[in-house]
Length: 95
Image (cartoon, rainbow, N blue to C red):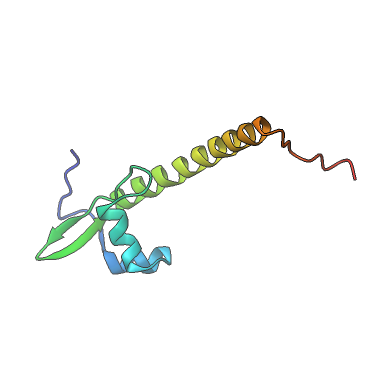
């Protein structure tokens, strides 16, 4: 378990939302529900929720790698399913 100390730099939920240009509700969803099995780690200080910079970096790296891997896998599985129905990818060279 990663311990976050007071000396770590931290952002409020609003600051993270502004920095990433997403809605505040999106950041809360990342914290409480997660994305593709990865949750954004946060902590409370005096009733306010904060995110350590290191936790934000870890979350964004995990999120970007899972999206890249998942999209390639989805593409291959969709192509296989289309192939099973007799629908192939159109050749772009032939027109």
